[in-house]
Image 1 (cartoon, rainbow, N blue to C red):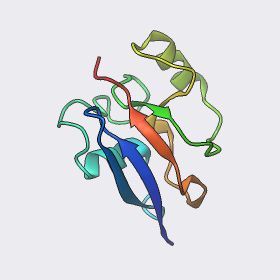
Image 2: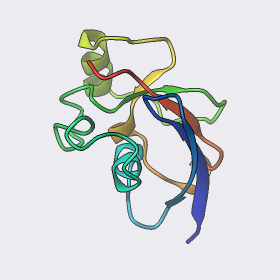
Image 3: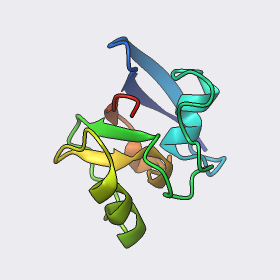
Length: 109
């Protein structure tokens, strides 16, 4: 398996180019946490169960993402700072198809 390259803009506006493994079943939220791109306790509060919106991000690239599931859509309908390109990082699995993904973390709510 290979690592993919993704760009994550943190909540301070700094863009980080990171390598994300595709062989560890990680999602975007876990990648953000592993690189410490958000303060501890401010992202992935529910543990990646789509039950909070702390890992909300804005997808900036044209990367084709898996279709949004009902639980993610429901959570985003109640979240703050939601935009048309909002997704929950915990619902975006790191696969080879995600290479080149660019996201910006939504403000902390």
